[in-house]
Length: 136
Image 1 (cartoon, rainbow, N blue to C red):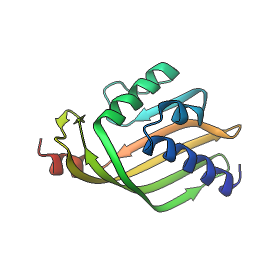
Image 2 (image 1 turned 180 degrees about the vertical axis):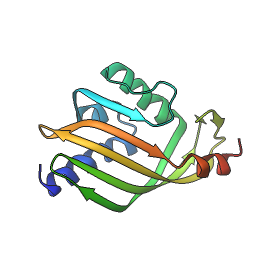
Image 3 (image 1 turned 120 degrees about the vertical axis):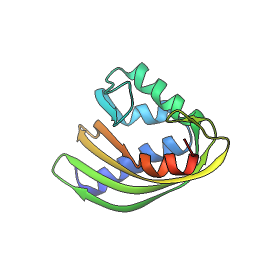
């Protein structure tokens, strides 16, 4: 994939996440995609139903206001996206009640692509910033 194609794919994926659209987010992943949110006790997920449930839990916990790209790196079949997420913690997030509080944190996506879709999504969140703001 070209950089432009990867950018378009990730924009589609992020738009689905911002809209809390589970089906839309899953549509950007390959069959058998690896979904890994580092630190999530569920570990790496590969089954679409389990990935969809992870998204539903996330969408119940967070309401996104904006997602700002800081930089992106590309390889032949992968990209690394560093961004900053801004919004509210509306529900339970990383085991802490959000209580509709404002929240912002850095987020890193390491994504592999295959056949025009994301075949591996590895997500790193700035847990220290999240815990500091939500007051564990």
